[in-house]
Image (cartoon, rainbow, N blue to C red; front, side, top):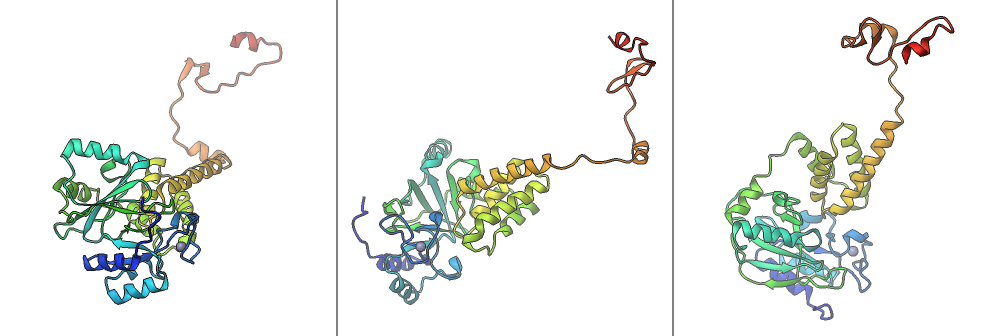
Length: 318
Ligand SMILES: [Zn+2]
């Protein structure tokens, strides 16, 4: 690994700008894997969170701006916007490489293109969008585990940035970025058009400051359960909202929030008092006809048998 060498981050950032990427300075981890950029980033944001006031919307390819940013923080990690690109993000930890094998078995080898190794056991295959279709990011692209898509409106951490594990992001293949293969374009486009619920999910976390996203994801999940949505739907919408955060909210933590919200919902339901119905409302209700267990004497459900004491009710029932 290159973790001991000290690359020149400014030069690398300027290189990306020259290649046409919009660049953004990110948090950089210190030697202990903690936030080393001075912004006191939380665990999941270390080395990944934009270090500008307006996040991704500050991204720039202007050399002067880039020099200014890296003058403020020479070790800052480098984020590059993935607008007009399709980046396949394979995550080893979540079976991304099994998914890659499945995809290659189905569609043939991934076309050669620029590939980065992430500092956290993953690979980024960077393709360019051959047309002008607005491709948006996706989690579990095409339903494949460990395969995310970064596209318009998202970014990746780029080499030689330092991961909090101590590994550096590296260029595995510096080939020219190839146009995205047809099957990939199709898969990226064919995501169902967003339903109203999905549009809500996309809006749900817009403008929520990074430190408050935990709470908001949890509240959002509670709201969806409250609407009576099933767990799978809630998971889908919460992951969608999480992937649209800047930086994206980690999937595993989002799923934890869904679990807690599900538990809360369940305990809430159990403590609700039973509905009270008036005699008038009951007599007005359309009830199903009674079914007889013993015609004229006993109905299915509840029958009350009355008689004088010692008349033999018990024997009769037996
Ligand atoms: Zn930081």
